[in-house]
Length: 414
Length: 108
Image (cartoon, rainbow over all chains, first blue to last red; front, side, top):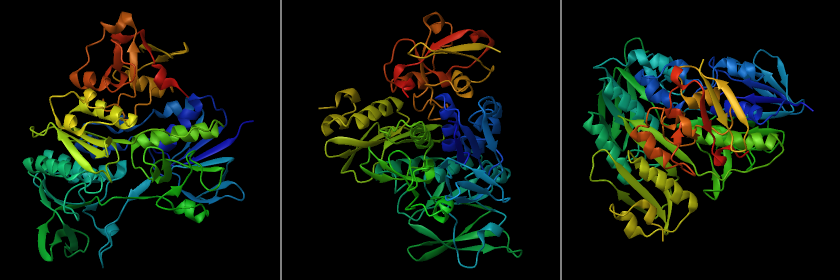
Protein backbone atom coordinates (compact mmCIF):
# COMPACT_ATOMS: atom_id res chain seq x y z
CA UNK A 1 0.00 0.00 0.00
CA UNK A 2 1.57 3.29 -1.05
CA UNK A 3 2.16 5.65 1.83
CA UNK A 4 2.62 9.38 1.99
CA UNK A 5 6.03 10.52 3.15
CA UNK A 6 6.72 14.19 3.82
CA UNK A 7 10.30 15.30 4.40
CA UNK A 8 10.73 18.74 5.95
CA UNK A 9 14.11 20.14 5.00
CA UNK A 10 15.64 19.81 1.53
CA UNK A 11 19.30 19.65 2.51
CA UNK A 12 21.78 16.79 2.26
CA UNK A 13 19.87 14.56 4.72
CA UNK A 14 16.39 15.18 3.32
CA UNK A 15 17.49 14.96 -0.31
CA UNK A 16 19.44 11.78 0.28
CA UNK A 17 16.55 10.13 2.12
CA UNK A 18 14.20 10.75 -0.82
CA UNK A 19 16.61 9.38 -3.40
CA UNK A 20 17.75 6.45 -1.24
CA UNK A 21 14.14 5.31 -0.82
CA UNK A 22 13.59 5.38 -4.59
CA UNK A 23 16.91 3.58 -5.10
CA UNK A 24 15.65 0.82 -2.84
CA UNK A 25 12.33 0.54 -4.63
CA UNK A 26 9.99 2.33 -2.22
CA UNK A 27 7.02 3.53 -4.26
CA UNK A 28 5.00 5.66 -1.85
CA UNK A 29 4.45 9.39 -2.38
CA UNK A 30 7.45 11.52 -1.46
CA UNK A 31 7.23 15.26 -0.94
CA UNK A 32 10.43 17.11 -0.09
CA UNK A 33 9.76 20.55 1.39
CA UNK A 34 12.54 23.12 1.64
CA UNK A 35 12.49 26.81 2.53
CA UNK A 36 15.39 27.67 0.21
CA UNK A 37 14.79 28.14 -3.52
CA UNK A 38 17.59 25.72 -4.52
CA UNK A 39 17.24 21.95 -4.80
CA UNK A 40 19.27 19.95 -2.25
CA UNK A 41 22.89 21.04 -2.42
CA UNK A 42 26.28 20.43 -0.80
CA UNK A 43 27.00 22.88 2.00
CA UNK A 44 30.66 22.03 2.70
CA UNK A 45 31.97 23.88 -0.40
CA UNK A 46 30.10 27.08 0.59
CA UNK A 47 32.95 28.23 2.83
CA UNK A 48 35.60 26.80 0.50
CA UNK A 49 35.42 26.52 -3.30
CA UNK A 50 32.10 28.34 -3.73
CA UNK A 51 33.22 31.36 -1.71
CA UNK A 52 36.52 31.32 -3.59
CA UNK A 53 34.62 31.29 -6.90
CA UNK A 54 36.02 27.96 -8.08
CA UNK A 55 32.79 25.97 -7.74
CA UNK A 56 29.61 27.09 -9.50
CA UNK A 57 26.12 27.12 -8.01
CA UNK A 58 25.02 24.23 -10.24
CA UNK A 59 28.02 22.18 -9.17
CA UNK A 60 26.76 22.39 -5.59
CA UNK A 61 23.46 20.70 -6.43
CA UNK A 62 23.39 17.07 -5.28
CA UNK A 63 21.37 16.06 -8.36
CA UNK A 64 19.93 17.96 -11.30
CA UNK A 65 16.25 18.83 -10.72
CA UNK A 66 15.34 16.47 -13.58
CA UNK A 67 16.44 13.54 -11.41
CA UNK A 68 13.69 14.33 -8.88
CA UNK A 69 11.12 14.49 -11.69
CA UNK A 70 12.29 11.21 -13.20
CA UNK A 71 12.05 9.43 -9.87
CA UNK A 72 8.72 10.96 -8.88
CA UNK A 73 9.95 13.01 -5.92
CA UNK A 74 7.85 16.15 -5.47
CA UNK A 75 10.03 19.15 -4.63
CA UNK A 76 8.29 21.96 -2.77
CA UNK A 77 11.05 24.56 -2.67
CA UNK A 78 10.86 28.08 -1.29
CA UNK A 79 8.22 26.70 1.05
CA UNK A 80 8.21 27.23 4.79
CA UNK A 81 6.54 24.78 7.13
CA UNK A 82 4.68 26.48 9.93
CA UNK A 83 3.59 23.58 12.10
CA UNK A 84 3.19 19.85 12.42
CA UNK A 85 -0.27 18.61 13.41
CA UNK A 86 0.44 15.12 14.77
CA UNK A 87 -3.21 14.46 15.59
CA UNK A 88 -4.44 15.06 12.04
CA UNK A 89 -1.07 13.85 10.62
CA UNK A 90 -0.71 17.02 8.56
CA UNK A 91 2.15 19.37 7.89
CA UNK A 92 0.92 22.96 7.86
CA UNK A 93 2.54 25.17 5.19
CA UNK A 94 2.96 28.90 5.86
CA UNK A 95 0.22 29.74 3.32
CA UNK A 96 -2.20 27.75 5.47
CA UNK A 97 -2.42 24.72 3.17
CA UNK A 98 -1.85 21.25 4.58
CA UNK A 99 0.17 18.26 3.44
CA UNK A 100 -1.06 14.94 4.86
CA UNK A 101 1.52 12.35 5.88
CA UNK A 102 1.71 8.75 7.02
CA UNK A 103 5.38 9.17 7.86
CA UNK A 104 7.07 12.50 8.52
CA UNK A 105 10.81 13.12 8.55
CA UNK A 106 12.27 16.27 10.06
CA UNK A 107 15.56 17.13 8.37
CA UNK A 108 15.49 20.76 9.42
CA UNK A 109 19.23 21.26 9.82
CA UNK A 110 20.76 24.07 11.79
CA UNK A 111 21.22 27.80 11.62
CA UNK A 112 24.01 30.20 12.45
CA UNK A 113 24.13 31.26 16.08
CA UNK A 114 23.63 35.04 16.14
CA UNK A 115 26.01 37.45 17.84
CA UNK A 116 24.07 39.07 20.64
CA UNK A 117 25.25 42.46 21.82
CA UNK A 118 23.20 44.84 23.91
CA UNK A 119 21.51 47.52 21.83
CA UNK A 120 22.55 46.02 18.48
CA UNK A 121 20.13 44.40 16.02
CA UNK A 122 22.54 42.27 13.96
CA UNK A 123 19.91 41.73 11.24
CA UNK A 124 19.86 45.47 10.50
CA UNK A 125 23.60 45.78 9.87
CA UNK A 126 24.60 45.93 6.20
CA UNK A 127 28.17 44.65 6.61
CA UNK A 128 27.76 41.98 9.27
CA UNK A 129 27.32 38.49 7.89
CA UNK A 130 26.82 34.87 8.85
CA UNK A 131 27.37 31.95 6.49
CA UNK A 132 25.05 29.00 6.20
CA UNK A 133 23.25 29.12 2.86
CA UNK A 134 24.04 29.79 -0.80
CA UNK A 135 22.34 33.18 -0.45
CA UNK A 136 24.63 34.09 2.44
CA UNK A 137 27.68 33.48 0.27
CA UNK A 138 26.16 35.35 -2.66
CA UNK A 139 25.69 38.37 -0.37
CA UNK A 140 29.18 38.07 1.05
CA UNK A 141 31.24 37.49 -2.10
CA UNK A 142 30.99 41.02 -3.56
CA UNK A 143 32.39 42.28 -0.23
CA UNK A 144 35.52 40.18 -0.58
CA UNK A 145 37.60 42.93 -2.18
CA UNK A 146 41.41 42.96 -1.77
CA UNK A 147 42.58 45.27 1.00
CA UNK A 148 39.32 45.28 2.94
CA UNK A 149 39.57 44.60 6.63
CA UNK A 150 37.59 41.55 7.73
CA UNK A 151 36.97 40.82 11.39
CA UNK A 152 35.95 37.20 11.76
CA UNK A 153 34.32 36.31 15.05
CA UNK A 154 34.84 32.62 15.84
CA UNK A 155 37.78 30.31 15.17
CA UNK A 156 36.01 27.04 14.35
CA UNK A 157 36.42 25.05 11.15
CA UNK A 158 34.00 27.13 9.07
CA UNK A 159 35.50 30.36 10.40
CA UNK A 160 39.01 29.20 9.52
CA UNK A 161 37.92 28.10 6.05
CA UNK A 162 36.49 31.56 5.45
CA UNK A 163 39.66 33.15 6.85
CA UNK A 164 41.72 31.10 4.38
CA UNK A 165 39.57 32.17 1.42
CA UNK A 166 39.65 35.81 2.52
CA UNK A 167 43.42 35.78 2.97
CA UNK A 168 43.86 34.17 -0.45
CA UNK A 169 41.66 36.91 -1.98
CA UNK A 170 43.83 39.62 -0.43
CA UNK A 171 41.72 40.78 2.51
CA UNK A 172 43.26 41.74 5.84
CA UNK A 173 41.86 39.18 8.24
CA UNK A 174 41.68 39.19 12.03
CA UNK A 175 40.10 36.22 13.79
CA UNK A 176 38.61 36.81 17.25
CA UNK A 177 38.23 33.63 19.30
CA UNK A 178 36.84 33.35 22.83
CA UNK A 179 38.80 30.22 23.73
CA UNK A 180 42.56 30.40 24.38
CA UNK A 181 43.19 28.35 21.21
CA UNK A 182 41.53 27.65 17.85
CA UNK A 183 39.14 24.70 17.39
CA UNK A 184 39.28 24.13 21.13
CA UNK A 185 36.08 22.06 21.25
CA UNK A 186 36.97 19.69 18.45
CA UNK A 187 40.72 19.17 18.34
CA UNK A 188 43.86 18.93 20.44
CA UNK A 189 46.34 21.75 21.18
CA UNK A 190 48.89 20.32 18.71
CA UNK A 191 46.51 20.74 15.77
CA UNK A 192 45.28 24.12 17.05
CA UNK A 193 48.76 25.61 17.12
CA UNK A 194 49.73 23.98 13.82
CA UNK A 195 46.76 25.56 12.04
CA UNK A 196 47.30 28.89 13.77
CA UNK A 197 50.84 28.86 12.35
CA UNK A 198 49.59 28.04 8.85
CA UNK A 199 47.13 30.94 8.97
CA UNK A 200 49.71 33.35 10.40
CA UNK A 201 52.07 32.47 7.54
CA UNK A 202 49.31 33.69 5.20
CA UNK A 203 49.00 36.97 7.09
CA UNK A 204 45.96 36.18 9.23
CA UNK A 205 46.04 37.81 12.69
CA UNK A 206 44.48 36.33 15.81
CA UNK A 207 43.01 37.66 19.03
CA UNK A 208 42.63 34.54 21.18
CA UNK A 209 40.93 34.38 24.59
CA UNK A 210 39.11 37.47 23.38
CA UNK A 211 35.48 38.43 23.19
CA UNK A 212 33.53 41.10 21.35
CA UNK A 213 32.61 43.80 23.85
CA UNK A 214 30.74 46.04 21.43
CA UNK A 215 30.66 47.14 17.82
CA UNK A 216 31.09 50.74 16.65
CA UNK A 217 28.54 51.89 14.05
CA UNK A 218 28.62 54.75 11.53
CA UNK A 219 26.18 57.67 11.65
CA UNK A 220 23.49 55.72 9.79
CA UNK A 221 23.60 53.05 12.47
CA UNK A 222 23.61 50.39 9.76
CA UNK A 223 27.32 49.81 9.18
CA UNK A 224 29.91 48.45 11.54
CA UNK A 225 33.10 50.50 11.45
CA UNK A 226 34.97 48.75 14.23
CA UNK A 227 34.84 45.88 16.65
CA UNK A 228 35.88 46.43 20.26
CA UNK A 229 37.63 43.29 21.43
CA UNK A 230 38.26 42.55 25.08
CA UNK A 231 41.33 40.48 26.00
CA UNK A 232 41.94 39.94 29.72
CA UNK A 233 39.89 43.07 30.41
CA UNK A 234 41.88 45.23 27.97
CA UNK A 235 39.74 46.60 25.17
CA UNK A 236 41.15 47.17 21.69
CA UNK A 237 39.37 48.61 18.64
CA UNK A 238 39.73 46.58 15.44
CA UNK A 239 38.82 48.71 12.43
CA UNK A 240 36.46 46.72 10.19
CA UNK A 241 35.11 47.05 6.67
CA UNK A 242 33.11 43.91 7.19
CA UNK A 243 32.37 41.47 10.00
CA UNK A 244 31.63 37.79 9.74
CA UNK A 245 30.14 35.92 12.67
CA UNK A 246 30.99 32.21 12.82
CA UNK A 247 30.31 31.29 16.42
CA UNK A 248 28.66 27.96 15.84
CA UNK A 249 25.32 26.60 14.84
CA UNK A 250 22.04 25.82 16.54
CA UNK A 251 19.79 22.90 15.58
CA UNK A 252 16.42 23.87 14.11
CA UNK A 253 14.09 22.27 16.63
CA UNK A 254 11.22 24.78 16.86
CA UNK A 255 8.82 22.69 14.73
CA UNK A 256 9.56 19.59 16.79
CA UNK A 257 9.19 21.40 20.12
CA UNK A 258 5.92 23.02 19.11
CA UNK A 259 4.64 19.59 18.05
CA UNK A 260 5.44 18.21 21.50
CA UNK A 261 8.34 16.00 20.42
CA UNK A 262 11.24 15.47 22.79
CA UNK A 263 14.08 17.95 22.21
CA UNK A 264 17.42 18.05 24.02
CA UNK A 265 20.27 19.62 22.02
CA UNK A 266 18.48 18.53 18.88
CA UNK A 267 15.44 16.40 18.21
CA UNK A 268 15.84 13.25 20.29
CA UNK A 269 15.73 10.06 18.20
CA UNK A 270 16.48 6.38 18.82
CA UNK A 271 19.09 4.37 16.90
CA UNK A 272 16.56 3.94 14.07
CA UNK A 273 16.00 7.74 13.69
CA UNK A 274 12.54 7.62 15.32
CA UNK A 275 11.41 10.47 17.55
CA UNK A 276 9.14 10.02 20.56
CA UNK A 277 6.35 9.67 17.92
CA UNK A 278 7.05 6.49 15.86
CA UNK A 279 5.53 8.07 12.73
CA UNK A 280 7.93 11.02 12.95
CA UNK A 281 11.63 10.61 12.25
CA UNK A 282 14.44 13.15 12.48
CA UNK A 283 17.79 13.00 10.68
CA UNK A 284 20.99 14.93 10.09
CA UNK A 285 22.28 18.03 11.86
CA UNK A 286 19.02 18.59 13.78
CA UNK A 287 18.92 15.13 15.36
CA UNK A 288 20.35 13.97 18.67
CA UNK A 289 21.07 10.27 18.23
CA UNK A 290 22.65 7.37 20.11
CA UNK A 291 26.09 6.64 18.68
CA UNK A 292 27.46 3.10 18.75
CA UNK A 293 30.92 4.53 18.12
CA UNK A 294 30.80 7.04 20.98
CA UNK A 295 28.74 4.95 23.41
CA UNK A 296 26.57 7.95 24.17
CA UNK A 297 24.17 10.39 22.53
CA UNK A 298 25.66 12.81 20.02
CA UNK A 299 24.50 15.48 17.62
CA UNK A 300 26.79 15.52 14.61
CA UNK A 301 27.04 18.42 12.20
CA UNK A 302 28.45 16.97 9.01
CA UNK A 303 27.53 15.86 5.51
CA UNK A 304 28.77 12.28 6.03
CA UNK A 305 26.50 12.00 9.07
CA UNK A 306 23.55 13.39 7.08
CA UNK A 307 24.15 10.76 4.38
CA UNK A 308 24.51 7.94 6.93
CA UNK A 309 21.47 9.05 8.92
CA UNK A 310 19.37 9.18 5.73
CA UNK A 311 20.27 5.52 5.14
CA UNK A 312 19.16 4.62 8.67
CA UNK A 313 15.82 6.42 8.18
CA UNK A 314 15.32 4.78 4.77
CA UNK A 315 15.78 1.34 6.36
CA UNK A 316 13.26 2.25 9.08
CA UNK A 317 10.67 3.41 6.54
CA UNK A 318 11.22 0.21 4.55
CA UNK A 319 10.56 -1.80 7.72
CA UNK A 320 14.10 -3.22 7.92
CA UNK A 321 15.44 -1.58 11.05
CA UNK A 322 19.19 -1.10 10.84
CA UNK A 323 21.19 1.08 13.22
CA UNK A 324 24.36 2.82 12.10
CA UNK A 325 27.76 1.50 13.08
CA UNK A 326 29.63 4.24 11.22
CA UNK A 327 32.54 6.10 12.76
CA UNK A 328 31.97 9.85 12.39
CA UNK A 329 34.37 11.66 10.10
CA UNK A 330 34.84 15.21 8.91
CA UNK A 331 36.95 17.11 6.42
CA UNK A 332 38.11 20.62 5.76
CA UNK A 333 40.28 22.44 3.27
CA UNK A 334 42.43 25.48 3.92
CA UNK A 335 45.07 26.95 1.59
CA UNK A 336 45.07 23.71 -0.39
CA UNK A 337 45.81 21.69 2.75
CA UNK A 338 43.62 18.63 3.11
CA UNK A 339 42.25 18.17 6.65
CA UNK A 340 40.65 14.80 7.35
CA UNK A 341 39.33 13.94 10.79
CA UNK A 342 38.00 10.61 12.02
CA UNK A 343 36.30 9.98 15.36
CA UNK A 344 35.65 12.36 18.25
CA UNK A 345 38.80 13.42 20.10
CA UNK A 346 37.13 14.79 23.26
CA UNK A 347 38.03 12.83 26.38
CA UNK A 348 41.23 11.30 24.97
CA UNK A 349 44.13 10.60 27.39
CA UNK A 350 46.99 11.51 25.09
CA UNK A 351 47.86 12.82 21.67
CA UNK A 352 50.66 11.33 19.56
CA UNK A 353 51.80 13.11 16.41
CA UNK A 354 53.59 12.16 13.22
CA UNK A 355 54.92 14.18 10.30
CA UNK A 356 55.30 17.35 12.33
CA UNK A 357 58.76 18.17 11.00
CA UNK A 358 56.94 19.70 8.03
CA UNK A 359 55.09 23.04 8.14
CA UNK A 360 52.31 21.71 5.93
CA UNK A 361 51.58 18.20 7.18
CA UNK A 362 50.68 16.71 10.53
CA UNK A 363 48.94 13.62 11.84
CA UNK A 364 47.57 13.67 15.39
CA UNK A 365 46.30 10.47 16.97
CA UNK A 366 44.12 10.65 20.08
CA UNK A 367 44.40 7.68 22.40
CA UNK A 368 41.99 6.39 25.02
CA UNK A 369 43.97 3.75 26.84
CA UNK A 370 45.84 1.85 24.12
CA UNK A 371 43.22 2.37 21.43
CA UNK A 372 43.08 5.19 18.87
CA UNK A 373 39.76 6.96 19.47
CA UNK A 374 40.24 9.66 16.86
CA UNK A 375 42.74 11.22 14.50
CA UNK A 376 43.24 14.59 12.80
CA UNK A 377 45.27 14.25 9.61
CA UNK A 378 46.57 17.21 7.63
CA UNK A 379 47.72 16.46 4.08
CA UNK A 380 48.86 12.93 4.87
CA UNK A 381 45.91 11.06 3.32
CA UNK A 382 47.61 7.68 3.63
CA UNK A 383 47.68 8.25 7.40
CA UNK A 384 43.99 9.08 7.29
CA UNK A 385 43.24 5.84 5.45
CA UNK A 386 45.16 3.87 8.07
CA UNK A 387 43.77 5.87 11.00
CA UNK A 388 40.21 5.26 9.86
CA UNK A 389 40.89 1.53 9.91
CA UNK A 390 42.51 1.65 13.34
CA UNK A 391 39.72 3.75 14.87
CA UNK A 392 36.97 1.63 13.33
CA UNK A 393 38.55 -1.70 14.28
CA UNK A 394 39.30 -0.54 17.83
CA UNK A 395 42.67 -2.32 17.59
CA UNK A 396 45.11 -1.90 20.49
CA UNK A 397 48.25 -0.02 19.47
CA UNK A 398 51.76 0.42 20.83
CA UNK A 399 52.16 4.17 21.56
CA UNK A 400 55.95 4.02 21.02
CA UNK A 401 55.55 2.51 17.58
CA UNK A 402 52.77 4.99 16.79
CA UNK A 403 55.13 7.86 17.63
CA UNK A 404 57.87 6.49 15.35
CA UNK A 405 57.53 7.98 11.85
CA UNK A 406 59.69 5.21 10.44
CA UNK A 407 57.19 2.48 11.31
CA UNK A 408 54.25 2.11 8.90
CA UNK A 409 50.90 2.79 10.57
CA UNK A 410 49.69 -0.60 9.43
CA UNK A 411 52.26 -2.07 11.85
CA UNK A 412 51.45 -0.17 15.04
CA UNK A 413 48.69 -2.50 16.21
CA UNK A 414 49.69 -4.85 19.01
CA UNK B 1 25.85 11.37 -24.49
CA UNK B 2 28.43 8.80 -23.37
CA UNK B 3 26.92 5.66 -21.93
CA UNK B 4 28.30 4.17 -18.72
CA UNK B 5 27.32 0.80 -17.30
CA UNK B 6 27.54 0.15 -13.57
CA UNK B 7 27.40 -3.48 -12.51
CA UNK B 8 26.50 -4.38 -8.93
CA UNK B 9 28.32 -7.19 -7.16
CA UNK B 10 25.20 -9.32 -7.51
CA UNK B 11 25.19 -8.79 -11.28
CA UNK B 12 22.46 -6.15 -11.66
CA UNK B 13 23.38 -3.70 -14.43
CA UNK B 14 22.61 0.01 -14.59
CA UNK B 15 23.24 1.63 -17.96
CA UNK B 16 23.08 5.42 -17.72
CA UNK B 17 23.50 8.39 -20.04
CA UNK B 18 26.30 10.54 -18.64
CA UNK B 19 27.17 14.15 -19.40
CA UNK B 20 30.58 15.14 -20.74
CA UNK B 21 32.48 17.10 -18.09
CA UNK B 22 30.89 15.49 -15.04
CA UNK B 23 32.51 12.71 -13.07
CA UNK B 24 31.56 9.05 -13.25
CA UNK B 25 30.52 9.41 -9.59
CA UNK B 26 28.04 12.17 -10.55
CA UNK B 27 26.67 10.08 -13.41
CA UNK B 28 25.88 7.37 -10.85
CA UNK B 29 24.40 9.81 -8.33
CA UNK B 30 22.21 11.58 -10.91
CA UNK B 31 20.72 8.25 -11.90
CA UNK B 32 20.35 6.82 -8.37
CA UNK B 33 22.73 3.96 -9.07
CA UNK B 34 23.22 2.17 -5.74
CA UNK B 35 26.62 1.65 -4.20
CA UNK B 36 28.12 5.11 -4.70
CA UNK B 37 27.57 7.23 -1.61
CA UNK B 38 30.27 9.89 -2.19
CA UNK B 39 30.24 11.18 1.36
CA UNK B 40 32.76 13.95 0.70
CA UNK B 41 30.92 15.21 -2.36
CA UNK B 42 33.61 14.40 -4.90
CA UNK B 43 36.90 15.69 -3.53
CA UNK B 44 38.85 12.44 -3.09
CA UNK B 45 38.48 12.65 0.67
CA UNK B 46 36.65 9.49 1.60
CA UNK B 47 36.82 6.58 -0.89
CA UNK B 48 33.05 5.91 -0.67
CA UNK B 49 32.73 6.12 -4.48
CA UNK B 50 35.17 3.25 -5.02
CA UNK B 51 34.68 1.24 -8.23
CA UNK B 52 36.53 -1.44 -10.19
CA UNK B 53 37.07 -0.35 -13.74
CA UNK B 54 36.44 -3.10 -16.28
CA UNK B 55 39.78 -4.68 -17.22
CA UNK B 56 39.46 -3.64 -20.86
CA UNK B 57 39.10 0.00 -19.75
CA UNK B 58 41.70 0.08 -17.00
CA UNK B 59 44.51 1.22 -19.29
CA UNK B 60 42.39 3.46 -21.49
CA UNK B 61 41.50 5.95 -18.76
CA UNK B 62 43.93 8.68 -17.70
CA UNK B 63 46.01 7.41 -14.78
CA UNK B 64 44.93 8.47 -11.27
CA UNK B 65 46.64 11.47 -9.71
CA UNK B 66 48.50 11.04 -6.45
CA UNK B 67 45.63 12.28 -4.25
CA UNK B 68 43.38 9.58 -5.69
CA UNK B 69 46.00 6.84 -5.48
CA UNK B 70 46.56 7.53 -1.82
CA UNK B 71 42.87 7.68 -0.90
CA UNK B 72 42.06 4.43 -2.72
CA UNK B 73 44.05 2.77 0.06
CA UNK B 74 41.23 3.82 2.42
CA UNK B 75 38.72 1.74 0.49
CA UNK B 76 37.76 -1.85 1.28
CA UNK B 77 38.86 -4.76 -0.92
CA UNK B 78 41.25 -2.77 -3.13
CA UNK B 79 42.27 -4.38 -6.44
CA UNK B 80 44.58 -3.33 -9.29
CA UNK B 81 41.58 -1.91 -11.19
CA UNK B 82 40.32 0.15 -8.21
CA UNK B 83 39.50 3.81 -8.88
CA UNK B 84 37.62 6.61 -7.14
CA UNK B 85 34.77 7.36 -9.51
CA UNK B 86 34.71 11.03 -8.46
CA UNK B 87 38.12 11.43 -10.08
CA UNK B 88 37.20 9.87 -13.45
CA UNK B 89 35.92 12.49 -15.87
CA UNK B 90 33.26 11.60 -18.42
CA UNK B 91 34.43 12.39 -21.98
CA UNK B 92 33.37 11.29 -25.45
CA UNK B 93 36.16 8.74 -25.17
CA UNK B 94 34.56 7.10 -22.14
CA UNK B 95 31.42 6.12 -24.10
CA UNK B 96 30.75 2.49 -23.27
CA UNK B 97 32.73 2.50 -20.01
CA UNK B 98 31.94 -0.40 -17.70
CA UNK B 99 32.61 -0.23 -13.96
CA UNK B 100 31.90 -2.80 -11.26
CA UNK B 101 30.64 -1.84 -7.79
CA UNK B 102 32.31 -3.34 -4.70
CA UNK B 103 30.14 -5.65 -2.61
CA UNK B 104 30.90 -3.58 0.51
CA UNK B 105 29.16 -0.52 -0.97
CA UNK B 106 25.99 -2.13 -2.31
CA UNK B 107 24.69 -3.75 0.86
CA UNK B 108 21.24 -2.41 1.74
